[in-house]
Amino acid sequence: MTTLQAPAARRSITDTLATGQRSYSFEFFPPKTERGERTLWQALRRVEAVNPTFVSVTYGAGGSSRERTAAITERIAEETTLRPVAHLTAVGHSLAELRHIIGRYADAGIRDVLALRGDPPGNPRGPWVPHPDGLQHAIDLVQLVRRCGDFDIGVAAFPERHPRSADWESEIRHLTAKFRAGAGYAITQMFFSADHYFRLRDRLAAAGCHAPVIPEIMPAVRFEQITRFAELSDATFPDQLARSLEAARNDPQAAHRIGVDHATELAQQLLDAEAPGLHYITLNHSTAALDIHRALRLPAHPAQPLS
Image 1 (tube, rainbow, N blue to C red):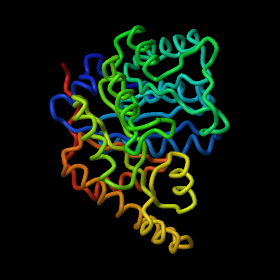
Image 2 (image 1 turned 90 degrees about the horizontal axis):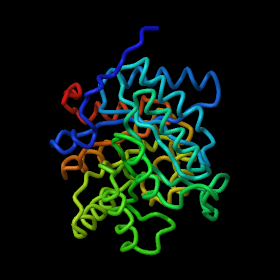
Image 3 (image 1 turned 30 degrees about the horizontal axis):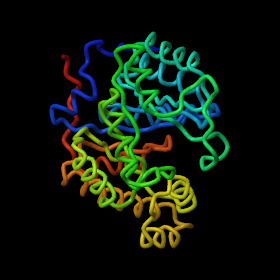
Image 4 (image 1 turned 135 degrees about the vertical axis):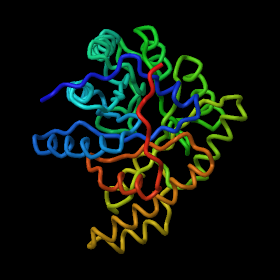
């Protein structure tokens, strides 16, 4: 297979957002089976055709998918024209392990990292116990990545507040601290009402922070799956959407239309209010995400300019 090298001087995601250019990106996760691997690469090739700003590859709880995440991220960088952003979590890793992973990404020419504290393995709502030789907070990971090289760093934001945050004051304080530590942008957790995003943005602005926060778009196309995800993330799931999806449990095509229509309407509201882009969750099946992207009738995304 032909190897394509991404241009080394490509403008960073942070710099691209600073120019006012919107970012459109797609999120994938590392599969566990050969069949899942084929599905992932088929979806990546379909996404490649719309020339997104970047694609990201998630990291399992407790670092459980560390090797698969690194391998897939490297392969995307080597074999496609896509720009990969590697998720990296602090949970379950020593400082030495984290430095090794960061160095591995650098050796592969990957300069984009989404730095996350991560959830405890086994039970995302369980007690947070840092590695004895590791890091306590996401800000510590941001600082580590910054010290390790010339990386463009993204972080997580929570439109309905992180489940472990005591209040909104501490939530905003922690998020702004991550930006001050070196993060250039944030990507939100899933949410289903634009008001949640707007309130987060207003709270950040009131704190004097105007860093770009990219909203995450989750197509709700399967009732059981999406309600479980919403529960794990503490996202408020609209009653009307839940009823519509439940009524369409035995009609996958109808459920797909319901989820895509709702996500498209949400995405349009966000873009109309000057959100800096969209980050689509694909669950490694790009159909719904691409249907939303096309329904928005967005102009073709230009190639990343060289600095």
